[in-house]
Length: 252
Image 1 (tube, one colour):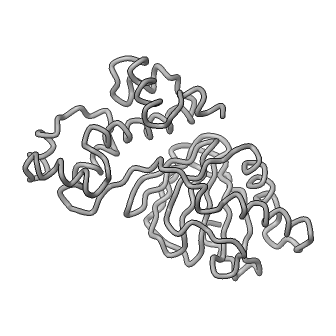
Image 2 (cartoon, one colour):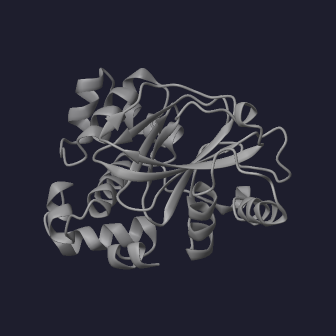
Image 3 (cartoon, helix red, strand yellow):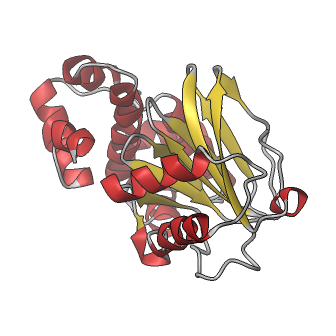
């Protein structure tokens, strides 16, 4: 079902609901845009430029022809919408992005993914998809994304830390591991990710914590699992990175 294409079902936009087992796809691309939303739990997506997490109040948009890998850590319900970007009426994000999902957009996504794939177009379905597209405008994307960089030395560090964000090795230790000077690695972080090493690691920890919290972990357990010395330190870092506390993030 992941490889349906709009032209094969006769619609420029359509949705489908998937009941997914724990799964990690190979890296692949499609000639059409895709929106992924997890109504429970989370889905993580890796692209060449970064790592994104969709939880109950965030969706991920991947434009056509962008290589991506989809990761499901446990069984879940996934809502996916496909877009023929050449024929839809509204502009869609041109780069991969995380989209905030307020209650209205959530209901639109769920309604769209409960339609039959071969649904008969009506005035109602036309309005549904029109309003959905209005709420997926490019400016709706958020910045909660972990950039991996392109330099091989930098990627050796970012990929390792993305897998194990609790790792507390210093920048100097990582520089030796990557075969670069400390100054070079520090410069690569800023020039290729827009963040300092410490800020990048903090964002990696926060993204992993969102995955854990979305899967039912407590704030206390998530804090220790991603490398913080106390829940209070974790909450402060979470608010600094996301703009709100963990409880409000999942409630809003």
